[in-house]
Amino acid sequence: MHKSRIAGFCIDCQSNDLEAAARFWSAALGLKVRAGAPVDPLYRTLDTPPDQVTVEVQQVTHPSRVHLDIEADDIEAEVQRLEKLGARRVGAVKTWYVMEAPTGQRFCVVRVQRPDFAARANSWND
Amino acid sequence: MHKSRIAGFCIDCQSNDLEAAARFWSAALGLKVRAGAPVDPLYRTLDTPPDQVTVEVQQVTHPSRVHLDIEADDIEAEVQRLEKLGARRVGAVKTWYVMEAPTGQRFCVVRVQRPDFAARANSWND
Image (cartoon, rainbow over all chains, first blue to last red; front, side, top):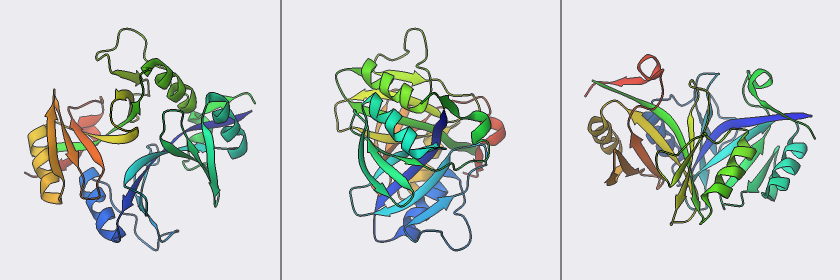
């Protein structure tokens, strides 16, 4: 058995100015850019309440888009579950997997992101 | 003064089979497709708890993507606020506005969607 659910979304910005992109989305969504040094230089986290979806702004080289993240306590089991539904693996990146839905959107399967995961995520029998 | 915040996201699917698209995303995200006749034949709602973001699956003719919705209690005031931040109006559709961010993503400004809007949305001085 493993668990998964929506973690949140990532706003992928084809831009050389990640700070400006993060400033726009922070102001647009009314969410503060997390203070302090970013964990990854290509990402800025917009702070959301712990019981709400995560929002990241990412600097990318492909055309701008928005992608969903699914959080899972067993990434390989979750990727296999999604493959059975018709998604395909695009590739592993650091600690996550990039997938493509049968409807064409890219999305990621990431590690558990939020504190109420155990209580509120969906359980799947592997 | 008006209020706004993230409402949720819409999974735009370039597909002739909206039911199959909704089935995939329902299973992938562990969210049930709302029962009963859809309000709009091009949309299927995936049921989320009332304190969480909304998730819609939409049949579209443009390439598949994911777009964000911002909910507001004054759509024109919110559109003008976003224009001042650098977004542009793409066009009005039914009760909402399609916008484009300076980073290129399309998103929508929609009417209030969720019951805890008044308590949790951001307030803006117009």
